[in-house]
Length: 404
Image (cartoon, rainbow, N blue to C red; front, side):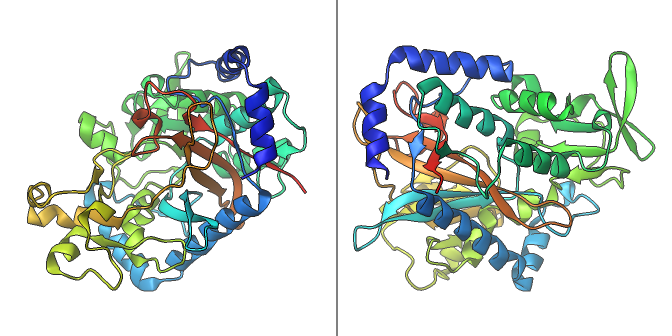
């Protein structure tokens, strides 16, 4: 941790600056921020950020180079959401790490989970700059990875999201987008890439084409920046105007199958220094735990494979709660060794933990590269903003690091 930056920030911080930060974010995203924004950024060394970024690439390649895993992941895609024309690789990756201490006392990243689904690439760019300019921080601090600046970052996002299409024929597709907490992120893409945000329930299918309405005109959709989560379709019982299994004349920026193919489902297949032990719940019952898996229940988490934002996670699951899961559904749950986050960020309210998300883009014809990060600060059992309510100096944040 960069103690000098932390001490100076804490000394100079004022509530008026934080209010100005929130006001700026709402202005720059044209939206109210309905999740908690942390008062402070997370200051990390460039070496620590690069270590996490490198681990994410290694873990993704371990999966994509494992033919047995790829077949198992393909089989795990629910038949209802098995979309034709899957891309050869995911366009987006997010890899979450907790900051932990090893036996020597060194701070090391430990994998929490990874997901081939877009995170808030637009909003995080706005947030990183807002922290620096609102608080008057050192101009050497950066939030973009891989040597990117504003121009190259957005050029890469345009390449991945829009491709060679007219932006009018590219949509960001979501369920009831204006009710989503992520709508500030959507607005940034609208402003920077000129794509439209549409409700998946309001598109129209004619033959093998999808259309959306704007200003009384129906416009053909050629490419979809997909933000629809299957779990939310199921929970809200959303009625779709098309079937995901249809052979549609459309390209996907973030093909829906990858949401299932690289997810919590991946963890039992990963053997790496940064990865905690994990097994599927049906393997747990069968006694196939693997060497080194903790027998102590307090060291274990139960996770549903395809939930989002921490929904359904249980700490120290009891035998009774596990037995409530029908045998035929146990393969959809994961038992994972708990990662102990180290409280390392000094705040006026005590030491705070951090979870760091490294976010990657992978354009067609290009390579997987880390481009930006996201931090979650918390003092609760879980790090999501929904799990740290009514607290200060917690919430969504940005990672800042000094450029060499």
